[in-house]
Length: 266
Image 1 (cartoon, rainbow, N blue to C red):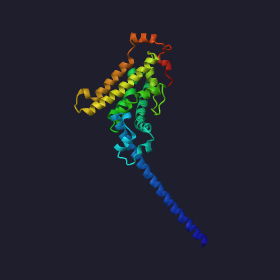
Image 2 (spheres, rainbow, N blue to C red; image 1 turned 60 degrees about the vertical axis):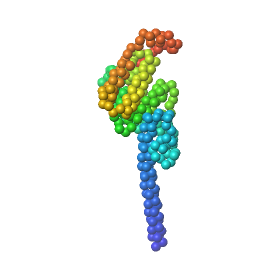
Image 3 (cartoon, rainbow, N blue to C red; image 1 turned 180 degrees about the horizontal axis):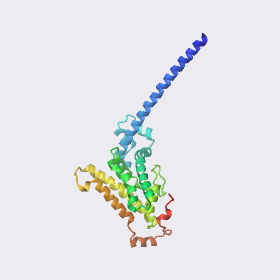
Image 4 (cartoon, helix red, strand yellow; image 1 turned 90 degrees about the vertical axis):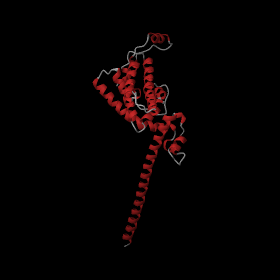
């Protein structure tokens, strides 16, 4: 009889314990869902404010207020710092861009012998598609335009970045591969100019669209994107002027080496 009673007490205690644990799990799940929703809202508000006012012109406190957070430390709690928040915005958009770009590069490698225009399309269209992304796409372009120098310094190993800016080595190899007639320093500068033209061009175009609702060819986004493609091809494929060649020969730098020497094996 005592043994039966002991088993009953043990069973009853175990059942209560399982019930408490189940409630705790459900509470954690609710908190996790709430946290995910809060993070997404903060990211959405942040990318809009960064696009409108500039990264340096927005504080975490500004984002908290705009998101209606009662906890004044909510943004810091979820992301740790402004860089952490910027990383969350990059993580929202960059994987899709990288996936589309890698698919385009796969096609080029399969076909072989890509042209400058082929590689330019792999560079620009995964980014340009963000112009049509209703989930913060235009805001992301305006934000990313502010990070061109940070990207360039990081890619060229001139300065480390606290941000994980995504893998662009494969794209960089493809671009340098079609710029083999240019010295490495000139090719690198042109890639920087290409990023400036692409991102700042799209960013300013998006601002023009917001400022005016007139439907003219000048404001047509598809035409603007095709124009950027033509401009990027001209920028990258144009031969150096005699003046640039002369300047390179006079500069006190190591001998210039064509860009393809620096490209990595695929």
